[in-house]
Amino acid sequence: MGPDGGTGALSLLPQGVVAAASTSPESLLALVAGSDGVTKGVLAVLGALSLLSWGIMFAKWRVFARAEARAGAFLRDFTKAASVEEAMQVAARAAPSGFTVVFARAMQFIADTRPALAGTADRSARLSAAQVEALRLVLDAESGRERERLSQYVPWLATVGSVSPLIGLLGTVLGVIQAFTGIAAKGSGNIGAVAPGIAIALVATAAALAVAIPAAFAYNLFAARLNRLDVALDGFGSELIALMARDGRI
Image 1 (spheres, rainbow, N blue to C red):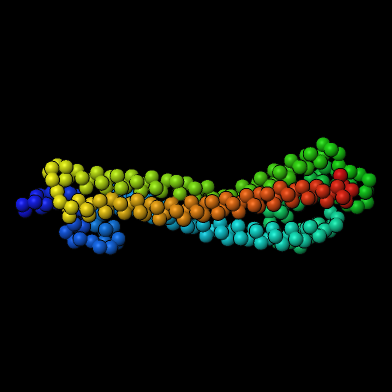
Image 2: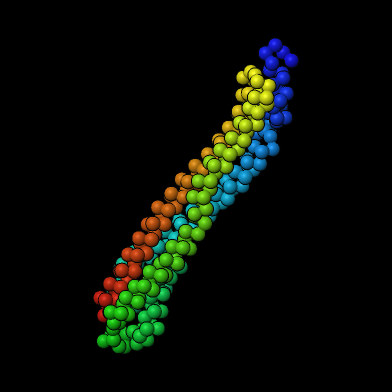
């Protein structure tokens, strides 16, 4: 043992830390390769969460992009419709979307509630106030199901964004404990013996932030897009009822 006690302190550190200290790693990969089993386990969990979050992000990005494009195309044509029959033709030509599903559900409700209203023969028959309120509830329920479909798996991004830093912190704390336990047992140690263990422990925190930041950003982005579609669905329900009123159905 040298005069500064560094060799004795180094011998008390975990084997992974000793390897890192002896080779003086200068890259992140070298630190990960020289880490102990606990740190590697934490990094493996974070890697799995990262793959999960990025998979959800790519999948939901496509879902929202397709939903917004189809909704925009349908609403542009729907606002030009002067009657329910024209709106039905627009819905028949449009690509399937949440708005066409809500519209089809409204038409089905009208046909089931007052079959004569499905055609144009009886223009005097109208929905009662109670039936209009029931139609509003049906539209709200169908819109809610569409929101539920669009938001599927999005909460997982919030979970990853909030849990990943805690997992990384756990790995860092355990790594620091292991690094200082050997030093404390000896009572002294130089910076060359302590620094590699601390650096390896901090890798877990850095990895956790790399996982959490994109997940939290994507969650907020998708939540904003979902809110916009939610508002558009609510407005579409009101416009549909207004169109029925102008067309003499209500």
